[in-house]
Amino acid sequence: MKESVSGCPVEDAIRLLGGRWRIVLIYHLLDGKRRFSELRRAMPSISQRMLTLDLRALEKAGLLQRTVYPEVPPRVEYDLTEEGRRLRELVDLLGKVGTRLANVPQCAPVQKSAA
Image 1 (tube, rainbow, N blue to C red):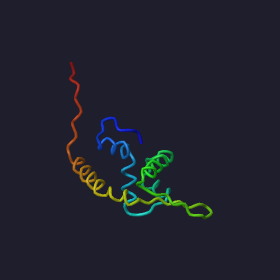
Image 2: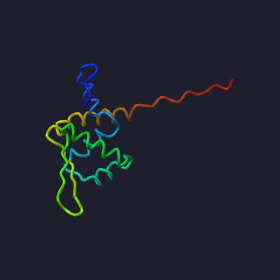
Image 3: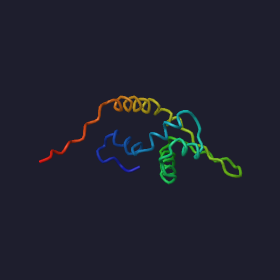
Image 4: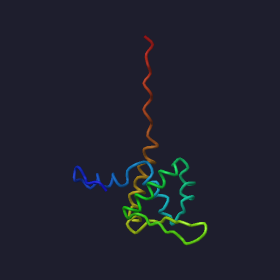
């Protein structure tokens, strides 16, 4: 991971967990092990490449573990590590914030006046 510019631990967390999919991946893995295809079905908008990159980044950070079973065809499962499971409280809080914000009326678009 790159060195923090500000020295702030929040910056480090955002760098690691930021982006569109990483917290969502952690959310889906909180219930237990998942295979790549299961994650793909749970998040149909993510590309295969992005899913692979984000899984690798979370594995490198020690938040999930990848288990490859010696079978034909190969079976690979992803599971959160103890450190990854410690993020449950954060994920739950983000879910509550998201629910609350979804109920906030959106700003109406600005109407152009007919001059």
